[in-house]
Image (cartoon, rainbow, N blue to C red; front, side, top):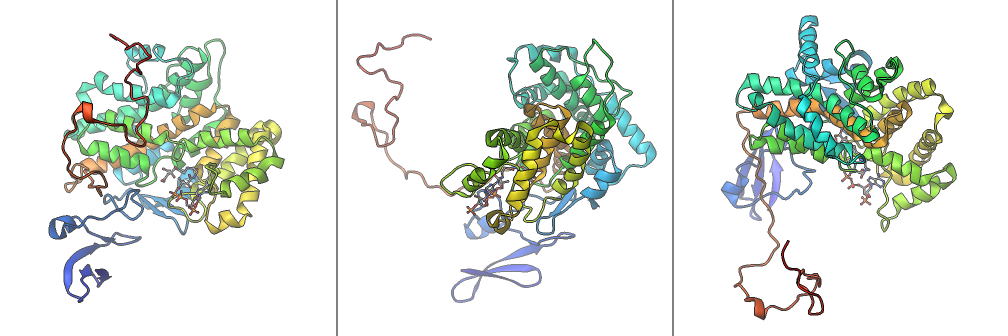
Length: 458
Ligand code: SDX
Protein backbone atom coordinates (compact mmCIF):
# COMPACT_ATOMS: atom_id res chain seq x y z
CA UNK A 1 0.00 0.00 0.00
CA UNK A 2 1.36 3.48 -0.77
CA UNK A 3 0.03 6.99 -0.87
CA UNK A 4 0.15 9.76 -3.39
CA UNK A 5 -1.57 13.12 -3.66
CA UNK A 6 -3.13 14.95 -6.55
CA UNK A 7 -4.46 18.49 -6.15
CA UNK A 8 -7.17 17.81 -3.57
CA UNK A 9 -6.97 14.11 -2.65
CA UNK A 10 -4.57 11.74 -0.95
CA UNK A 11 -4.87 8.35 -2.67
CA UNK A 12 -4.06 5.06 -0.91
CA UNK A 13 -3.43 2.42 -3.58
CA UNK A 14 -2.62 -1.32 -3.40
CA UNK A 15 0.34 -3.12 -4.97
CA UNK A 16 -1.55 -3.22 -8.27
CA UNK A 17 -1.99 0.57 -8.21
CA UNK A 18 -5.74 0.25 -7.62
CA UNK A 19 -7.36 2.87 -5.35
CA UNK A 20 -8.05 1.62 -1.81
CA UNK A 21 -9.37 4.99 -0.72
CA UNK A 22 -9.10 8.65 -1.67
CA UNK A 23 -8.81 11.00 1.30
CA UNK A 24 -9.48 14.73 1.01
CA UNK A 25 -6.50 17.07 1.45
CA UNK A 26 -7.48 20.12 3.51
CA UNK A 27 -5.71 23.44 3.13
CA UNK A 28 -5.40 26.19 5.74
CA UNK A 29 -4.74 29.87 5.09
CA UNK A 30 -1.00 29.27 5.55
CA UNK A 31 1.27 26.37 6.50
CA UNK A 32 1.12 22.63 5.80
CA UNK A 33 -1.89 20.83 4.31
CA UNK A 34 -3.54 17.91 6.09
CA UNK A 35 -4.98 14.58 4.97
CA UNK A 36 -8.51 14.25 6.35
CA UNK A 37 -8.53 10.74 7.89
CA UNK A 38 -11.81 11.11 9.78
CA UNK A 39 -13.43 8.36 7.66
CA UNK A 40 -10.33 6.17 7.18
CA UNK A 41 -11.39 3.65 9.86
CA UNK A 42 -15.03 3.49 8.76
CA UNK A 43 -14.03 2.90 5.14
CA UNK A 44 -10.88 0.74 5.49
CA UNK A 45 -10.72 -0.61 9.07
CA UNK A 46 -7.29 1.03 9.30
CA UNK A 47 -6.33 3.60 11.95
CA UNK A 48 -3.37 5.98 11.96
CA UNK A 49 -0.78 5.58 14.74
CA UNK A 50 0.75 8.77 16.16
CA UNK A 51 1.16 8.51 19.99
CA UNK A 52 2.53 12.02 20.62
CA UNK A 53 0.56 13.59 17.77
CA UNK A 54 3.74 14.74 15.99
CA UNK A 55 2.03 14.27 12.62
CA UNK A 56 -1.57 14.83 13.68
CA UNK A 57 -3.70 17.97 13.47
CA UNK A 58 -6.37 17.66 16.19
CA UNK A 59 -8.52 20.59 15.11
CA UNK A 60 -8.99 23.58 12.89
CA UNK A 61 -7.90 26.77 14.63
CA UNK A 62 -7.62 30.43 13.65
CA UNK A 63 -5.94 31.62 16.84
CA UNK A 64 -2.17 31.00 16.63
CA UNK A 65 0.14 30.11 13.78
CA UNK A 66 3.67 28.79 14.31
CA UNK A 67 6.28 28.23 11.60
CA UNK A 68 8.85 26.20 13.57
CA UNK A 69 11.49 26.26 10.84
CA UNK A 70 11.30 30.00 10.32
CA UNK A 71 10.83 30.80 14.02
CA UNK A 72 7.54 32.62 13.40
CA UNK A 73 4.74 32.98 16.00
CA UNK A 74 1.55 34.86 15.07
CA UNK A 75 -1.54 35.47 17.17
CA UNK A 76 -4.52 36.17 14.87
CA UNK A 77 -1.90 37.25 12.30
CA UNK A 78 0.05 39.63 14.55
CA UNK A 79 3.70 38.73 15.31
CA UNK A 80 4.74 38.02 18.88
CA UNK A 81 7.52 40.58 18.49
CA UNK A 82 5.06 43.40 17.70
CA UNK A 83 2.61 42.33 20.40
CA UNK A 84 5.29 42.34 23.12
CA UNK A 85 6.58 45.71 21.97
CA UNK A 86 3.23 47.47 21.46
CA UNK A 87 0.47 45.63 23.32
CA UNK A 88 -0.70 44.71 26.82
CA UNK A 89 -1.63 41.28 28.15
CA UNK A 90 -5.34 42.09 28.40
CA UNK A 91 -5.34 43.43 24.85
CA UNK A 92 -3.67 40.21 23.64
CA UNK A 93 -6.18 38.16 25.65
CA UNK A 94 -9.00 40.05 23.87
CA UNK A 95 -7.30 39.41 20.49
CA UNK A 96 -6.94 35.67 21.20
CA UNK A 97 -10.56 35.37 22.37
CA UNK A 98 -12.38 37.50 19.80
CA UNK A 99 -10.05 37.53 16.77
CA UNK A 100 -9.42 41.26 16.36
CA UNK A 101 -7.54 43.97 18.25
CA UNK A 102 -10.12 45.84 20.39
CA UNK A 103 -11.13 49.45 19.80
CA UNK A 104 -10.47 51.83 22.67
CA UNK A 105 -14.01 51.39 24.03
CA UNK A 106 -13.89 47.59 23.60
CA UNK A 107 -10.58 47.44 25.47
CA UNK A 108 -11.91 49.69 28.23
CA UNK A 109 -15.00 47.50 28.63
CA UNK A 110 -12.96 44.26 28.61
CA UNK A 111 -10.54 45.71 31.17
CA UNK A 112 -13.49 46.68 33.39
CA UNK A 113 -15.02 43.19 32.96
CA UNK A 114 -11.75 41.65 34.13
CA UNK A 115 -10.95 44.17 36.86
CA UNK A 116 -14.32 43.74 38.59
CA UNK A 117 -13.92 39.96 38.80
CA UNK A 118 -10.42 39.89 40.39
CA UNK A 119 -11.61 39.15 43.95
CA UNK A 120 -12.39 35.56 44.94
CA UNK A 121 -15.25 34.38 47.15
CA UNK A 122 -14.10 34.92 50.75
CA UNK A 123 -14.92 31.30 51.60
CA UNK A 124 -12.34 30.21 49.02
CA UNK A 125 -9.60 31.57 51.26
CA UNK A 126 -10.28 28.72 53.67
CA UNK A 127 -9.05 26.22 51.05
CA UNK A 128 -5.53 27.53 51.51
CA UNK A 129 -5.35 26.78 55.23
CA UNK A 130 -5.83 23.12 54.36
CA UNK A 131 -2.61 23.02 52.33
CA UNK A 132 0.84 22.54 53.89
CA UNK A 133 2.98 25.70 53.69
CA UNK A 134 5.32 23.99 51.22
CA UNK A 135 2.54 22.80 48.90
CA UNK A 136 3.53 23.48 45.27
CA UNK A 137 1.55 26.47 43.94
CA UNK A 138 0.45 24.42 40.92
CA UNK A 139 -1.16 21.84 43.22
CA UNK A 140 -3.02 24.67 44.94
CA UNK A 141 -4.05 26.36 41.69
CA UNK A 142 -5.32 23.16 40.07
CA UNK A 143 -7.44 22.44 43.16
CA UNK A 144 -8.74 25.97 43.74
CA UNK A 145 -9.54 26.63 40.06
CA UNK A 146 -11.50 23.39 39.84
CA UNK A 147 -13.38 24.36 43.01
CA UNK A 148 -14.49 27.65 41.43
CA UNK A 149 -17.31 25.76 39.67
CA UNK A 150 -18.83 25.17 43.12
CA UNK A 151 -18.85 28.91 43.81
CA UNK A 152 -20.10 30.02 40.41
CA UNK A 153 -22.87 27.59 39.36
CA UNK A 154 -24.43 30.53 37.48
CA UNK A 155 -21.75 30.33 34.74
CA UNK A 156 -21.04 26.65 34.07
CA UNK A 157 -23.55 25.99 31.31
CA UNK A 158 -21.14 25.70 28.37
CA UNK A 159 -24.02 25.89 25.88
CA UNK A 160 -24.95 29.41 27.03
CA UNK A 161 -22.72 32.04 25.33
CA UNK A 162 -23.33 34.58 28.09
CA UNK A 163 -22.33 32.08 30.80
CA UNK A 164 -19.24 31.13 28.78
CA UNK A 165 -18.26 34.81 28.62
CA UNK A 166 -18.73 35.35 32.36
CA UNK A 167 -16.60 32.28 33.12
CA UNK A 168 -13.91 33.56 30.75
CA UNK A 169 -13.88 36.92 32.57
CA UNK A 170 -13.82 35.25 35.98
CA UNK A 171 -10.94 32.91 35.14
CA UNK A 172 -8.68 35.52 33.51
CA UNK A 173 -9.43 37.89 36.39
CA UNK A 174 -8.96 35.48 39.28
CA UNK A 175 -5.89 33.51 38.22
CA UNK A 176 -3.40 36.17 39.47
CA UNK A 177 -5.31 36.46 42.75
CA UNK A 178 -5.37 32.67 43.25
CA UNK A 179 -1.66 32.35 42.37
CA UNK A 180 -0.57 35.22 44.63
CA UNK A 181 -2.63 33.75 47.49
CA UNK A 182 -0.76 30.45 47.06
CA UNK A 183 2.52 32.33 47.43
CA UNK A 184 1.35 34.34 50.46
CA UNK A 185 0.18 31.11 52.12
CA UNK A 186 3.62 29.56 51.54
CA UNK A 187 5.41 32.44 53.27
CA UNK A 188 2.90 32.92 56.08
CA UNK A 189 1.93 36.44 55.06
CA UNK A 190 -1.66 37.76 54.88
CA UNK A 191 -3.43 37.61 51.54
CA UNK A 192 -3.37 40.88 49.63
CA UNK A 193 -6.59 41.87 47.90
CA UNK A 194 -6.54 43.05 44.26
CA UNK A 195 -6.40 46.81 43.74
CA UNK A 196 -8.62 48.06 40.93
CA UNK A 197 -6.48 51.11 40.23
CA UNK A 198 -3.51 48.92 39.23
CA UNK A 199 -3.13 47.33 35.81
CA UNK A 200 -3.05 43.53 35.45
CA UNK A 201 0.74 43.11 35.83
CA UNK A 202 1.24 45.68 38.59
CA UNK A 203 -1.75 44.21 40.46
CA UNK A 204 -0.10 40.77 40.41
CA UNK A 205 3.17 42.20 41.76
CA UNK A 206 1.24 44.03 44.48
CA UNK A 207 -0.64 40.90 45.54
CA UNK A 208 2.65 38.99 45.57
CA UNK A 209 4.98 41.39 47.35
CA UNK A 210 3.09 44.08 49.27
CA UNK A 211 2.62 43.68 53.03
CA UNK A 212 0.27 45.58 55.34
CA UNK A 213 3.18 47.02 57.28
CA UNK A 214 4.49 49.35 54.59
CA UNK A 215 3.59 50.97 51.28
CA UNK A 216 4.51 49.09 48.08
CA UNK A 217 4.93 50.57 44.63
CA UNK A 218 5.38 47.98 41.85
CA UNK A 219 8.65 48.57 40.01
CA UNK A 220 7.68 49.71 36.48
CA UNK A 221 10.56 47.74 34.90
CA UNK A 222 9.30 44.61 36.65
CA UNK A 223 5.68 45.33 35.69
CA UNK A 224 6.75 45.76 32.04
CA UNK A 225 8.65 42.46 32.24
CA UNK A 226 5.62 40.66 33.74
CA UNK A 227 3.45 42.09 30.94
CA UNK A 228 5.93 40.75 28.34
CA UNK A 229 6.12 37.35 30.08
CA UNK A 230 2.32 37.10 30.13
CA UNK A 231 2.13 37.94 26.41
CA UNK A 232 4.82 35.48 25.26
CA UNK A 233 3.27 32.68 27.34
CA UNK A 234 -0.38 33.44 26.46
CA UNK A 235 -0.95 30.91 23.69
CA UNK A 236 1.01 28.46 21.58
CA UNK A 237 -1.43 26.51 19.37
CA UNK A 238 -1.98 22.82 20.30
CA UNK A 239 0.68 22.29 23.00
CA UNK A 240 0.19 19.61 25.66
CA UNK A 241 -1.82 21.71 28.12
CA UNK A 242 -4.00 23.33 25.45
CA UNK A 243 -4.74 19.91 23.95
CA UNK A 244 -5.66 18.81 27.48
CA UNK A 245 -8.09 21.71 27.88
CA UNK A 246 -9.65 20.91 24.50
CA UNK A 247 -9.94 17.21 25.35
CA UNK A 248 -11.51 17.80 28.76
CA UNK A 249 -13.75 20.53 27.35
CA UNK A 250 -14.87 18.25 24.50
CA UNK A 251 -16.86 16.20 27.03
CA UNK A 252 -18.62 19.49 27.86
CA UNK A 253 -17.02 19.62 31.30
CA UNK A 254 -17.36 23.12 32.76
CA UNK A 255 -14.63 25.69 31.95
CA UNK A 256 -13.25 25.69 35.51
CA UNK A 257 -12.64 21.92 35.34
CA UNK A 258 -11.13 22.22 31.85
CA UNK A 259 -8.70 24.98 32.90
CA UNK A 260 -7.78 23.04 36.04
CA UNK A 261 -6.80 20.12 33.81
CA UNK A 262 -4.66 22.47 31.72
CA UNK A 263 -2.88 23.65 34.89
CA UNK A 264 -2.10 20.03 35.77
CA UNK A 265 -0.63 19.35 32.31
CA UNK A 266 1.38 22.58 32.22
CA UNK A 267 3.04 21.61 35.54
CA UNK A 268 5.13 18.91 33.86
CA UNK A 269 8.90 19.68 33.65
CA UNK A 270 8.92 18.98 29.91
CA UNK A 271 6.23 21.66 29.44
CA UNK A 272 5.50 24.69 31.58
CA UNK A 273 7.43 23.28 34.54
CA UNK A 274 10.63 23.72 32.52
CA UNK A 275 11.28 27.27 33.76
CA UNK A 276 11.42 26.05 37.35
CA UNK A 277 13.57 23.13 36.17
CA UNK A 278 15.96 25.59 34.47
CA UNK A 279 16.76 27.25 37.79
CA UNK A 280 17.12 23.88 39.54
CA UNK A 281 19.49 22.80 36.74
CA UNK A 282 21.57 25.98 37.08
CA UNK A 283 21.78 25.42 40.85
CA UNK A 284 22.86 21.82 40.16
CA UNK A 285 25.58 22.99 37.75
CA UNK A 286 26.68 25.56 40.33
CA UNK A 287 29.61 27.18 38.51
CA UNK A 288 30.84 27.98 35.02
CA UNK A 289 33.69 25.45 35.18
CA UNK A 290 31.12 22.63 35.51
CA UNK A 291 29.17 23.63 32.38
CA UNK A 292 31.18 21.30 30.06
CA UNK A 293 30.43 18.34 32.37
CA UNK A 294 26.68 18.94 32.12
CA UNK A 295 26.80 19.62 28.38
CA UNK A 296 28.48 16.20 28.08
CA UNK A 297 25.75 14.61 30.20
CA UNK A 298 23.00 16.23 28.10
CA UNK A 299 24.52 14.59 25.02
CA UNK A 300 24.89 11.16 26.64
CA UNK A 301 22.06 8.84 25.55
CA UNK A 302 22.56 6.79 28.70
CA UNK A 303 22.08 9.82 30.92
CA UNK A 304 18.54 11.06 31.51
CA UNK A 305 19.84 14.59 32.11
CA UNK A 306 18.59 17.17 29.62
CA UNK A 307 19.36 20.85 29.30
CA UNK A 308 16.13 22.29 30.61
CA UNK A 309 15.01 25.34 28.67
CA UNK A 310 16.51 23.99 25.46
CA UNK A 311 14.74 22.31 22.55
CA UNK A 312 11.20 22.37 21.28
CA UNK A 313 8.86 20.00 19.44
CA UNK A 314 7.93 22.64 16.87
CA UNK A 315 10.70 25.24 16.78
CA UNK A 316 13.67 23.89 14.86
CA UNK A 317 15.18 27.34 14.85
CA UNK A 318 15.25 29.89 17.63
CA UNK A 319 12.03 30.19 19.67
CA UNK A 320 10.96 33.76 18.74
CA UNK A 321 9.71 34.21 22.30
CA UNK A 322 13.19 33.46 23.64
CA UNK A 323 14.63 36.19 21.42
CA UNK A 324 12.09 38.70 22.68
CA UNK A 325 12.73 37.68 26.29
CA UNK A 326 16.50 38.14 25.91
CA UNK A 327 15.92 41.92 25.61
CA UNK A 328 13.53 41.95 28.59
CA UNK A 329 16.09 39.89 30.51
CA UNK A 330 18.79 42.49 29.90
CA UNK A 331 16.46 45.30 31.05
CA UNK A 332 15.60 43.50 34.29
CA UNK A 333 19.23 42.52 34.97
CA UNK A 334 20.24 46.12 34.39
CA UNK A 335 17.58 47.18 36.91
CA UNK A 336 18.74 44.72 39.60
CA UNK A 337 22.44 44.88 38.76
CA UNK A 338 24.12 42.31 36.50
CA UNK A 339 26.16 40.93 39.38
CA UNK A 340 22.88 40.48 41.30
CA UNK A 341 22.94 36.72 41.04
CA UNK A 342 25.77 34.43 39.82
CA UNK A 343 23.13 32.01 38.51
CA UNK A 344 22.18 34.53 35.86
CA UNK A 345 25.76 34.80 34.62
CA UNK A 346 25.95 31.00 34.64
CA UNK A 347 22.85 30.87 32.43
CA UNK A 348 24.48 33.18 29.90
CA UNK A 349 27.63 30.98 29.85
CA UNK A 350 25.55 27.82 29.39
CA UNK A 351 23.67 29.43 26.50
CA UNK A 352 26.95 30.54 24.87
CA UNK A 353 28.57 27.09 25.08
CA UNK A 354 25.45 25.13 24.05
CA UNK A 355 24.84 27.32 20.99
CA UNK A 356 28.40 26.65 19.81
CA UNK A 357 28.17 22.88 20.37
CA UNK A 358 27.66 20.68 17.29
CA UNK A 359 25.20 18.36 19.11
CA UNK A 360 22.78 21.16 19.92
CA UNK A 361 23.25 22.89 16.59
CA UNK A 362 22.73 19.65 14.62
CA UNK A 363 19.61 18.75 16.63
CA UNK A 364 18.41 22.37 16.43
CA UNK A 365 18.18 22.62 20.20
CA UNK A 366 17.97 26.33 20.95
CA UNK A 367 16.91 28.11 24.14
CA UNK A 368 13.13 28.20 24.41
CA UNK A 369 10.81 30.59 26.20
CA UNK A 370 11.31 28.74 29.48
CA UNK A 371 15.07 29.37 29.52
CA UNK A 372 14.68 33.10 29.90
CA UNK A 373 11.39 33.34 31.75
CA UNK A 374 12.87 31.64 34.81
CA UNK A 375 15.91 33.94 34.81
CA UNK A 376 13.75 37.06 34.57
CA UNK A 377 11.35 35.95 37.29
CA UNK A 378 14.21 35.02 39.60
CA UNK A 379 15.74 38.47 39.11
CA UNK A 380 12.38 40.06 39.98
CA UNK A 381 12.32 38.05 43.21
CA UNK A 382 9.63 35.51 42.29
CA UNK A 383 10.47 32.14 43.89
CA UNK A 384 11.01 29.32 41.35
CA UNK A 385 7.91 27.26 42.35
CA UNK A 386 5.85 30.29 41.27
CA UNK A 387 7.38 30.42 37.75
CA UNK A 388 4.93 27.86 36.35
CA UNK A 389 2.09 29.51 38.25
CA UNK A 390 2.83 32.70 36.31
CA UNK A 391 2.91 30.64 33.11
CA UNK A 392 -0.55 29.30 34.06
CA UNK A 393 -1.86 32.84 34.59
CA UNK A 394 -0.61 33.80 31.13
CA UNK A 395 -1.81 30.65 29.35
CA UNK A 396 -5.33 30.97 30.80
CA UNK A 397 -6.32 33.43 28.04
CA UNK A 398 -4.94 31.07 25.38
CA UNK A 399 -6.59 28.03 26.94
CA UNK A 400 -9.92 29.89 27.10
CA UNK A 401 -9.63 31.14 23.52
CA UNK A 402 -8.96 27.59 22.31
CA UNK A 403 -11.73 26.18 24.54
CA UNK A 404 -14.20 28.80 23.23
CA UNK A 405 -13.20 28.00 19.63
CA UNK A 406 -13.69 24.28 20.29
CA UNK A 407 -17.12 24.74 21.95
CA UNK A 408 -18.28 26.99 19.08
CA UNK A 409 -17.04 24.55 16.38
CA UNK A 410 -20.10 22.74 14.95
CA UNK A 411 -17.87 19.84 13.80
CA UNK A 412 -16.37 19.28 17.26
CA UNK A 413 -17.21 15.94 18.93
CA UNK A 414 -15.99 14.39 22.17
CA UNK A 415 -12.30 13.46 21.88
CA UNK A 416 -12.03 9.67 21.83
CA UNK A 417 -8.78 8.31 20.26
CA UNK A 418 -8.35 4.66 19.22
CA UNK A 419 -5.38 2.44 20.17
CA UNK A 420 -3.08 -0.28 18.87
CA UNK A 421 -3.86 -3.16 21.26
CA UNK A 422 -0.79 -5.17 22.36
CA UNK A 423 -2.24 -6.99 25.39
CA UNK A 424 -3.36 -10.59 26.01
CA UNK A 425 -5.89 -12.22 23.72
CA UNK A 426 -9.07 -13.75 25.23
CA UNK A 427 -8.37 -16.25 28.05
CA UNK A 428 -10.36 -17.96 30.86
CA UNK A 429 -10.44 -16.89 34.53
CA UNK A 430 -7.92 -18.71 36.79
CA UNK A 431 -9.14 -19.62 40.30
CA UNK A 432 -7.00 -18.17 43.11
CA UNK A 433 -5.65 -21.51 44.29
CA UNK A 434 -4.29 -22.31 40.82
CA UNK A 435 -2.37 -19.08 40.33
CA UNK A 436 1.43 -18.85 40.47
CA UNK A 437 3.55 -15.67 40.63
CA UNK A 438 4.63 -14.64 37.11
CA UNK A 439 7.94 -12.92 36.15
CA UNK A 440 7.69 -9.25 36.99
CA UNK A 441 4.74 -9.62 39.32
CA UNK A 442 5.67 -7.62 42.45
CA UNK A 443 6.53 -10.10 45.24
CA UNK A 444 4.98 -7.76 47.83
CA UNK A 445 1.56 -8.27 46.37
CA UNK A 446 -0.10 -6.98 49.53
CA UNK A 447 -0.81 -10.41 50.89
CA UNK A 448 1.02 -10.88 54.26
CA UNK A 449 3.81 -13.44 54.21
CA UNK A 450 3.11 -16.33 56.65
CA UNK A 451 5.54 -14.77 59.18
CA UNK A 452 3.71 -11.41 59.02
CA UNK A 453 0.44 -10.94 60.98
CA UNK A 454 -2.45 -10.23 58.61
CA UNK A 455 -3.55 -6.58 58.93
CA UNK A 456 -7.17 -6.66 60.05
CA UNK A 457 -9.48 -3.69 59.82
CA UNK A 458 -8.74 -0.16 58.47
C1 SDX B 1 7.21 24.46 26.46
O1 SDX B 1 4.54 22.61 22.80
C2 SDX B 1 4.70 23.80 23.13
O2 SDX B 1 4.39 24.72 22.39
C3 SDX B 1 5.25 24.01 24.52
C4 SDX B 1 5.53 25.44 24.90
C5 SDX B 1 4.28 26.27 24.99
O3 SDX B 1 4.39 27.49 24.90
O4 SDX B 1 3.21 25.66 25.26
O5 SDX B 1 6.40 26.04 23.95
C6 SDX B 1 6.19 25.52 26.26
O6 SDX B 1 6.87 23.42 26.94
C7 SDX B 1 8.62 24.71 25.97
C8 SDX B 1 9.53 23.44 26.17
C9 SDX B 1 9.98 23.44 27.63
N1 SDX B 1 10.68 22.15 27.94
C10 SDX B 1 11.97 22.09 28.16
O7 SDX B 1 12.74 23.04 28.05
C11 SDX B 1 12.46 20.70 28.59
C12 SDX B 1 13.73 20.33 27.83
N2 SDX B 1 13.40 20.08 26.43
C13 SDX B 1 13.08 18.75 26.03
O8 SDX B 1 12.71 17.85 26.98
C14 SDX B 1 12.52 18.62 24.63
O9 SDX B 1 13.24 19.43 23.82
C15 SDX B 1 11.05 18.89 24.44
C16 SDX B 1 10.20 18.13 25.40
C17 SDX B 1 10.77 20.35 24.59
C18 SDX B 1 10.69 18.48 23.02
O10 SDX B 1 10.77 17.13 22.98
P1 SDX B 1 10.52 16.34 21.61
O11 SDX B 1 9.96 17.19 20.55
O12 SDX B 1 9.78 15.09 21.94
O13 SDX B 1 11.99 16.06 21.15
P2 SDX B 1 12.77 14.77 21.51
O14 SDX B 1 12.65 14.53 22.98
O15 SDX B 1 12.32 13.72 20.58
O16 SDX B 1 14.27 15.21 21.22
C19 SDX B 1 14.80 15.11 19.92
C20 SDX B 1 16.28 14.81 20.15
C21 SDX B 1 16.52 13.62 21.07
O17 SDX B 1 17.76 13.06 20.71
P3 SDX B 1 17.75 11.76 19.72
O18 SDX B 1 16.87 10.72 20.38
O19 SDX B 1 17.15 12.23 18.42
O20 SDX B 1 19.20 11.36 19.62
O21 SDX B 1 16.92 15.94 20.80
C22 SDX B 1 17.37 15.54 22.10
C23 SDX B 1 16.68 14.25 22.44
O22 SDX B 1 17.50 13.45 23.28
N3 SDX B 1 16.98 16.61 23.02
C24 SDX B 1 17.75 17.09 24.00
C25 SDX B 1 16.98 18.12 24.59
N4 SDX B 1 15.80 18.21 23.98
C26 SDX B 1 15.80 17.28 23.01
N5 SDX B 1 19.00 16.77 24.42
C27 SDX B 1 19.47 17.49 25.48
N6 SDX B 1 18.79 18.50 26.10
C28 SDX B 1 17.55 18.84 25.68
N7 SDX B 1 16.89 19.83 26.28
